[in-house]
Length: 302
Ligand code: NAP
Image (cartoon, rainbow, N blue to C red; front, top):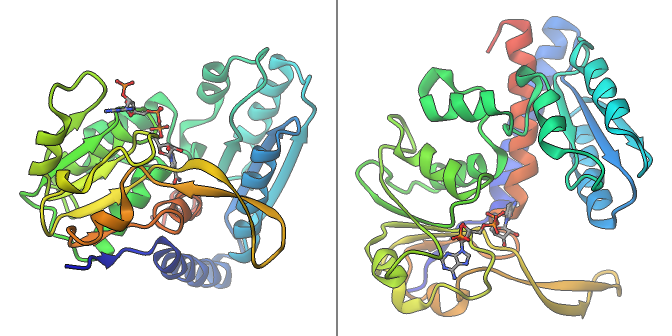
């Protein structure tokens, strides 16, 4: 069997086009667009490239976009005051603080200072709580898990009653996606197991999965014989395993590998996400979707 490829790059385009249309309509009726601020501290090259991509996407969608760059030595107090300014700025619907932060700044304090109603990353404890309650309580699901669920829904995979096994229990992927899949509602209603480094028989759990979601950060961790024939395999892992010269640009780029042995797994799975081009492109897309949602809440049209 050769699995159907679940391509994040294609699903991203579908969703971005939907957001673009929505923004145009709301602009015509309300003469306003969603506002997003990205706060970047220092000059970490990976952070700069993530922020650049977020800004590019926000601009494509016609958002009001503010890029606020702060020096590496910005004080915690100044950063908290800056967040407060954006919390009370009505033209801003989403506040993004690019992580990681310099060591002298308490990350938790900063993330908790963002108004939960502008926390489009979905990391504030209030939004984590809302996600746990589920249903109408959810405002901003965290972006990578939201992207995973959207990919599952849009590729027509049955989730109701499905055995879902999640490898990994991080706060940004494993725990929230497990929580989302177990809720009552479309794209969920699953029976969920979370496995991690202390799990006794990882292979046995994976073999039961109708939907296997792997977010461990270990290249090739999941072996083909752990996959149930016909299962949907979502590989969240992004592991740099070397470098190569890009054919397009002639520049050095990272060779990326997922947590699943893709080449062998695609002969057993029913559907599978590639790395790169699978879950990766979905995260920024869902960030934009959350920003639009925040804007709609503000206008009372959500
Ligand atoms: P993380 O915080 O390091 O968590 C990894 C989890 O996997 C932990 O719960 C760990 O278990 C578990 N794990 C690690 N090795 C294992 C093993 N051998 N057997 C069973 N469980 C194992 O990582 P994360 O932030 O969730 O990210 C996971 C991967 O997804 C990374 O490759 C990351 O780059 C990628 N990622 C991609 C996106 C995207 O595409 N947009 C977004 C986020 C993350 P313990 O808790 O027991 O240590």
